[in-house]
Image (tube, rainbow, N blue to C red):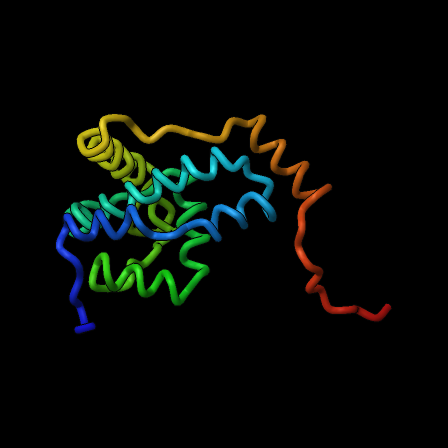
Length: 161
């Protein structure tokens, strides 16, 4: 693939809709206790976020919701896949800047205004606003599941006394 080449918008949308996020959803369920339906709904919103970044990201700062951001983090952690997906969709690595709104250049008002723009574009493209999927009860349930039932192999080094 040529450097800085990317799919046209319509083909990028088709590619985004076909990305296999099943491993991320599985990890969110097994290791973080997320409800599978909620994880799938947030995955759909993340796909829409990627599309909006493709279509409007060059001209607008488009911060994700907290839930979309959590899903984005999981995608980024699969570095080879994320890099490849970004190259195909955008033609470059889509950086994640976690300090928007708290750095010396931007304020929380800037972040809220940018998220307002994100909401307007989301409604324009998809007919509904971004909304919170996971209730506080769901988050509490996930926390309890993580503590009691989570499958995660121990990877802690032994520390002598």
